[in-house]
Amino acid sequence: MDKTLVIMAAGMGSRYGGLKQIESVGPDGSLIIDYSIYDAKRAGFNKVVFIIKKQIEQQFYEAIGKRIEKQINTEYVFQELSDIPKEFHVPENREKPWGTGQAILACKDVVNEPFLVINADDFYGKGTFKAMANWIDAEKPDDKKPYKFAMAGYILKNTLSRSGHVARGVCDVGQDGYLVDINERLKIMRIDGQTKYALEDDTWVDVDENSFVSMNMWCFGAQMPQEIEKRFYEFLKNEVPENPLKAESVLPNIVRDILHEELCTVKVIPTNERWFGVTYKEDKESVVSAILEKIKSGEYPEVLW
Image (cartoon, rainbow, N blue to C red; front, side):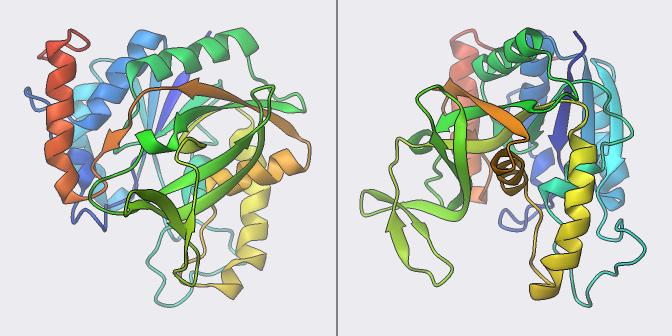
């Protein structure tokens, strides 16, 4: 069946210090995003939708889109701070995007089939793409309630950066393999040999490094953007006034809310793949080395496309 890969690439990479989506990591100049699309394509995905900011459209097209559209059906949507219902306004001095929820909402007119969501700057591994594609083919998620969702379940210790803290959705998973709860932790890192996350007051709390975490790799049916739309309205109405400069509508929280309302089930698909990405500039060298190892092992060709 038709399957779409949705890539969230609107972030400018403030911690990284530039448009990290166009940093080459492969010997042929390929980017992390190339490897994700390559893996998705061989897993059976036949369309890719890029979510970007309008201001980087030409730069993104020259660096990525022009090459990718020769390989797979390609579309673009734009995530903009100003793209909100007319009864709302952008708070003065607000620069931070509205979050990954709004990113998926931007796809509502171009996604008409089950889709897989990923971040542009994370390397997920070919086995995970295949497992998620197999789930879509087996479950055929549609608009019937309860919705069928799926999430790639990474092991927390396999997703940490040596260069600083990371944000992860820490999951509570039932014995049946379905998601029970998820909590977004914005600062997770290893401190003195122990994995911890920071509370809002910067108190550090231990967390089990063998916990399942979300890396924003989700499978949804085509109805998900519409489901997000009404929730985005409530977010603007209720949450933004309390935190006008930083409030974000994020996917883990949206999925948690839908789950708690018993409107969906979320199958957690375990993976032992080791994440890597360029959260920080210092991460790039390790990513380049990891890609080379995978090429040497035959997992990828030296020239990707």
